[in-house]
Image 1 (cartoon, rainbow, N blue to C red):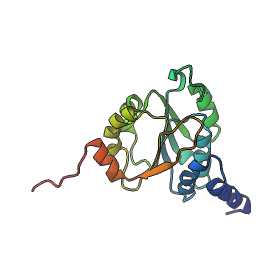
Image 2 (cartoon, rainbow, N blue to C red):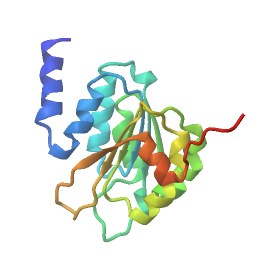
Image 3 (spheres, rainbow, N blue to C red):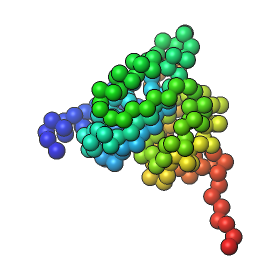
Length: 185
C-alpha cells in the first residue's frame, strides 16, 4: 500500500466529515465490500467515498452499488438531494456498476429485493421514515447474510449530526417477522 493511499485511508477513517460516516468508511477499508445498498443518498458525497474506498481493494467492475432515493419525487420544500440524472453522473465517474432506484425505501426495495443477494454493506440514512422502514424490513432477509454489515442512522433533525447504529442480520430477521425455526424431520 503506497504512502499516498495510507494517508488517504487514515483521513477517510479518522478525520473525514461528517464524523458520523467514519465507522462506515472504517468497515470499507477492511477491503471486503463489493456489493452495496444505500437507502437515502442525499447529495451523493458519502456514496462516492464508499465507491472510492471499495475501488482501492477491488477492480471497479467488480463493485455493484444500488442507491435508493426519492430523487425528483422529493418534496419541493426539501432542498437536500440530487435528481436521478445528477446522482448517476456523480457516481458513474467511479467506474463501478451503478443502479439507482427512485422511490421510497419500501416501494423501491420491494421492486429490487430478488435481484440483490449477499450484500456486503447496507447503509440506511436517518431521513427514512420509520413507518416506511418497518414495512421494508420484510425484504431484507433475502438480501443479506450473517456477514453483511448494516449501518442504520438514527433519525435526527436536519443539519444536526446523527450517529449510526450497527444492526445484526438476526435483528433484521426479527424486525422482518422471520424467525428461523428448525423443521421437524
